[in-house]
Length: 309
Image (cartoon, rainbow, N blue to C red; front, side, top):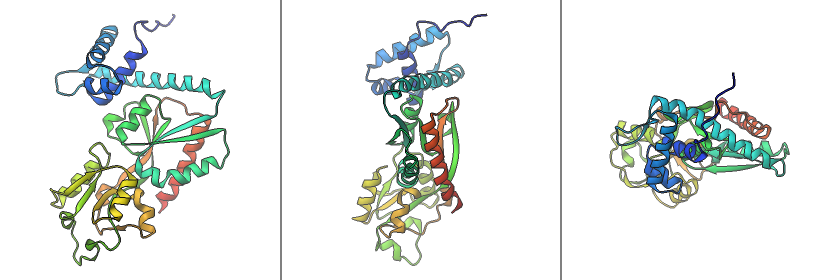
């Protein structure tokens, strides 16, 4: 028996809009991301629901959430959209050098990626590497749209991992760093609550480590940090901390070399409860190119050294 053909009314715009609304849980935000009007995005979603014959979103709450049917459709829509993007890219690769696109959280772009990319480029494969950094939600959206081949960083929340696979590489904690000579470094009985009088650099609300940081602060009675600056910029955090008395709360990997070189110093805080898995996030059912596999193996080799420490 021949398979039923795909309904010709389903267009790429339906899939792209559905994926963005599912990611952002908002038609308004999805429309902005896709550079279209909110009514146009709403119409596209309504058209898609009419075509498939079932509601894909639960509209009973303030934010839009996928229905059970929407969850099923998301997995197949995401996989097919990514496969199509890779197919288009592969046609161009016959005439041009392959580009392996990596989405990287700031912690890994400072620590694990430099030696990994060095190993990869030393193999002299006909491929180049493109590194894209940003918060986790942004990078996962690029992965779902096929704009990156893999994401490396902390594991996302389970509800963001539909259709994705996570490979654990090593574990990492959050640390509190200051400039050398900071007054808190000479406190004889230092406690975490002593950071309250000092300006604090915090991870942004959409960062993976923000909930860990907030729980740690509350557990130690810190409810009001002073002159808070939210940033995931390595360069800004490093420069600002060196020239001020600010306390920078950041993943250990971002500042590991700075601490080792004496450019920054760790405050004596037990942050073991913030320990979390760092690894590779990829599509479950999508094969990687040979070059992407080679880079992934380089990342694994470098990460193995971190896990043994």
